[in-house]
Length: 97
Image (cartoon, rainbow, N blue to C red; front, top):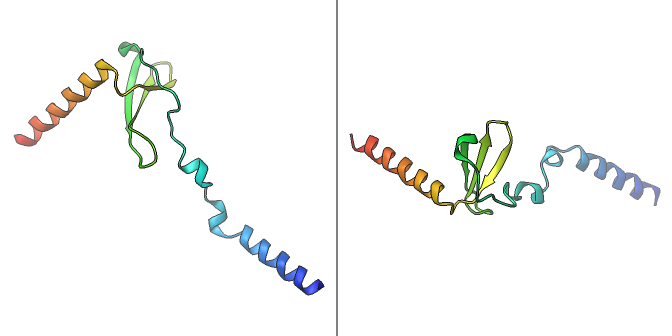
């Protein structure tokens, strides 16, 4: 019976030191960045905008503000929709040249 316990402890020790143990749990990997969104973010305070789209989360827009804070913006905000339309049209114009 003591040998069974030693084998079990050895197997658990090997399992804990395997490279797979360093990976993040699934719950952290699949967690969406934006849990809540803002509808009103002053455009003048935005330094940069990032767009994220992952299979497990909806389309997410993250704005980095001038004070280095990051906030999530509602993708259905009117000014953001217009911004995306303008950006897409600029890309299409560049490709057609």
